Length: 408
Image (cartoon, rainbow, N blue to C red; front, side):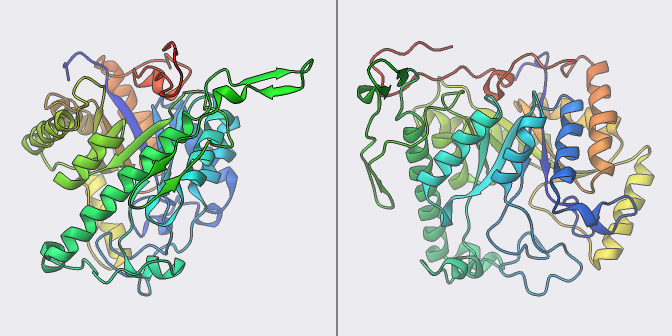
């Protein structure tokens, strides 16, 4: 990524923040977590900060106390329950104008036909600002909520993760996710852009010749199509995925437009980008745009000492030190800007930042980090496109089923 290229920024929203005790912070709005006004305020604040998009976390089960736990247990002191991410995004979409909305979809326990229709609808509701974050689930207790499949590996320690049977399960789940995304993308294309003709004189609402069966048949899905929803305004809403290692890198480079990686320093960032690009070439997508974003949890304050002290207070409330699947930055907005620009030189085109506690760290991002980056000429001063793909410099894809389709 050229050092002169503007950074892209996304904000990952998860309840009261990514720290499990964030809901107990003095400025938290714990009593409003399940209200639309709360989520609207967060997204509108991110939009005021000119952020490219927000991701909205979701899960099919109660969150464990630690990110790497296999079972929620009693989850003492942690928020239990959440709103549906796709429906939350649809609720705030009409009351925002520019920012992208990327809810999480757990593909392991849902159907691609339903996800395709939901995200296409979100794209219409937002006038072209929709996407999804693909999430897998291998936790036994989450599978038990549906009763359609059984997982026995708990992934609680390195032995679990290194077990050949567990590795095979993970690989299978990512292959299933790739087929899931392929079905979703084909369904988005199953209506040509001009399929809806609304010809009152002849009584033809659609041109049936411009609707297409997708006829997908694979190991996990057999979907005939077409979709019930016309092609989304973006043609293909944004597909994003979090990846920590080779197998998820391989999935993301086959299926996504944005991959989030979790290096702990600039050298690891360079290595991650290099591996992602190699997998992209191997997938035959070397000539296609694929954004690689760094993922970080952030604790921000006016001084580094204040940020450290606030994290320690939250850790004390939680009863243990905070750990995450992503690196944790604790410091000032200026210090974070230094790190982001250093890591950009490793090839990252943007960052997804997870506020540790909301509203504190979200406001520090929008009113501290963003002005700092703007002063350095590294971030936009106004939104320059009307769609999420446009904000990320991605064209509107041609419809795979149309004989002739012009790209925007």
